[in-house]
Image (cartoon, rainbow over all chains, first blue to last red; front, side, top):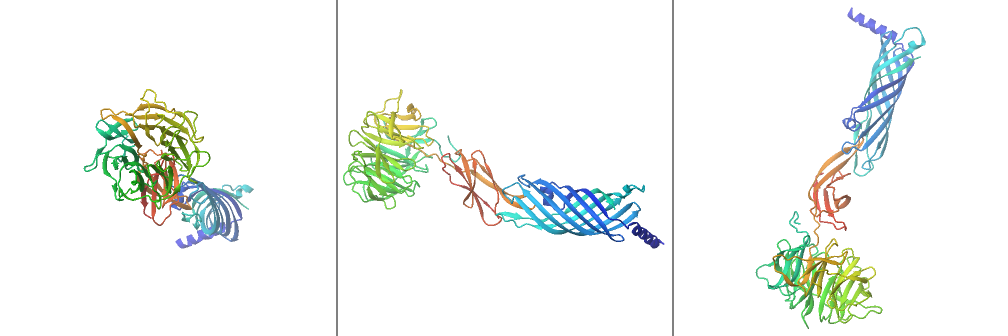
Length: 198
Length: 433
C-alpha cells in the first residue's frame, strides 16, 4: 500500500510537471568556496542571472542562463585594491516535479563556460588578468505560482534557489617573482527570482 | 656626542707646543673645548715639534707627523698614541712634514724632509703600519707636502728646493713628470702646500718661494696650471696651508707673510676677503686649517700663537678660540685634524616574510626592520643580493621588499646614506628560501 502511494505521488508530480517554457531574472548572494578568494574579496557578493527553460520531454527541460558577478577586495597583506568580475554561461538539463499544482521542485545540472576579468591596483602583480575556461554547475530550488485567477499573471512565478558552480583556474603569471594560485573560482549562490512561464 | 658604538662624533686633534713640551690635544667640535691630552704607549719616542696631523679616511686613526722623524698613530677611542709607523725603507726618517692617505685608506705617502740626500716620500702600508718603500724617479731637495688625488690614481709632491710639483703614479709609486706652469704665471719658486678640490678636478698649490707669493690652480686632467689666485691688494707673501670647503665652493689660504687667512671664491679663483679675528689674538703664522665635514666650522692653527681659532665660514669671523680649560695651554699650535664623520650602518636588521595574496596571484614580500643608524643619516639604501631595490628617508626604519623570489639565497642589506651621498657599510639579513 505504501509503495502504491509513493507511485501515485510521483505520477501526479510528473503530470503537474509538464512545465512550459520560461524566462526568469534572478539575484543572489554569491560566496566563494576558495578560502583565499573569500579573504581577499571579503567573502561574497551579488550574483545576477537571466535564465530560461524550454521543455524537452515531460518533466525534463533544457536550461540556460547567463550570469554576472562582481567583487572588489584588498590584497591580504598591504590592502591594495583588487576587483574581478565573471561572466559564466550555463547550459544544462533541468528536471522539474510538481509538489502541488502551484509549487515545483527542480534540479539542474550542466556545464558552464566562464570568462573572468580581474584588475589589481598594484605594481607588484599583474595589473590585468583575463581568463576563460569551462566548469560545471548545479542548482536546485522551488518555483511557486502565487496566483490562480485564470488571468495571464497566473504564469508569473517566484523562484528560490541554491546553486553551486565549479570553475578551476591556474595562473602562470608572466611577471617576474609573481606566482600563480590554483583557484576554484566557483562557489555557492543563494537567492530568488521572478519568472514568467509562457 | 658619544654615540652607540663608542665612536666619538665631533672629535678633533690639535698639535702644538706647551710649557711641558710638544703635545697633541683632543677636542670636541661640538663644544670647542679640549677633552684630553693624548697619551703615549710605552716605548714610543718623545713627540717632536708637530708638523701636521691627518685622520685616515675612515676616521679610525689619526696620524701625527713630527720634526723628529716620527709618525704617531693615535687611537681616537682612547686618545692614545699606540704606535709609530715602522720605517723599513732603509732611509732615515728625519723630519716628517706631511702625510696624505689614498681614498681607500690603504696607503699613505709621507714626506720626509731629511736634508740633502735624505729627502724622500715614504710609502706606508696603513694596515701594517709599515713604511716599506719610497717614491722613486726624482731627486728631491726640499720636500714640503704631498697630496694623493681623491680618485687615488696619482699624487702631487711639492718640492721647495727643486721648484717642482712632481706627478706620481700611485700604482708604481714612481714620479712620472712635473706640473707645468702655463701662460703668464710665474714659474714655481717654492711650492709648499697642495690641496685637491673635493671633486679632484684641480688642486691649489701655494708657493712662498718668492715675494709676491703665488697660489696656483693646477688642473688634474693636464697636470698643468690654469691660473693663479688673484686678489686686489696686498698680494700673497708667503702662502702656506690651504683647505677647501666640503662643497668645493670656497677655499682658505693662510699666509705666513701677511699673517692673514684669505677666503677664496673657487669659481672666480679670487680672494674675496680675510678672516676677521675679532677680539681673539691676531694671526701670526697661520698653519694647518681644517673644515668640519658639514662645512659649518673652520679651525685654524697658528705656529706663533697659542690658540686654535674657531671660524664661522659664512661670516669669515673667528667666533672663539678653543677652550683648553685646566689642561695644558699651548704656546703654539701647528696642526689640526678633524675626524671624518663616521657613517654607521643601521643595527638590528631583521625581516618577516609575507605572502601578499591578490586572489588569483600572489607575491612574496619581505618586511625589513632596523634600528636607526647612530649617524642620523639622511636616508637608507636597501639591497637584495647586492642589487639596490629601494631607498627610504632617514626617518623611516622599515622597508617592504616586494616581489621577493621564492628560491635561492636572499641576502638583504641596508646601508645608511649621508646628505652628500656617502654610504655606510651594510647591515645584512639573510632570508631562508
